[in-house]
Length: 125
Image (cartoon, rainbow, N blue to C red; front, top):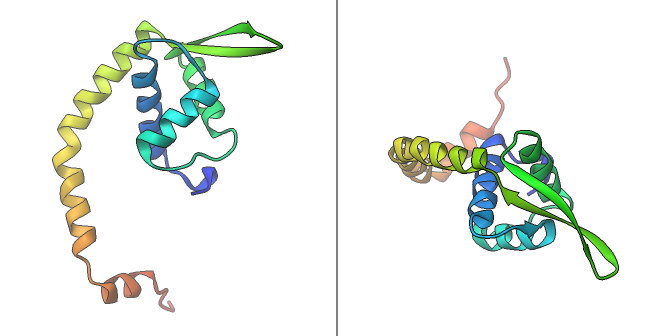
């Protein structure tokens, strides 16, 4: 899926996965990208993880710190106290919404192929 086509919900989930990954120890972008890929079962587009990390850093959810590794600099990210609070608050919100999401998923899966085709067809006004 193309980065520009991903919705806010998916990017929000990626942020939560990143915070979970950073809970125990700092990590760098490429390593986080692999963990998010594995967790979500979807390959992220080039640079997508860095865009999300920058946004999270601006929001105060993570802190980035440059570190010299052999011949290159690498930016390590760690979860901030604000990031920990955010993760806990979002889980409370998700627990509240899970049954609604499950009902919507069941509904969409139950829609017949014919209904799906009809809903995607644009009718003249």
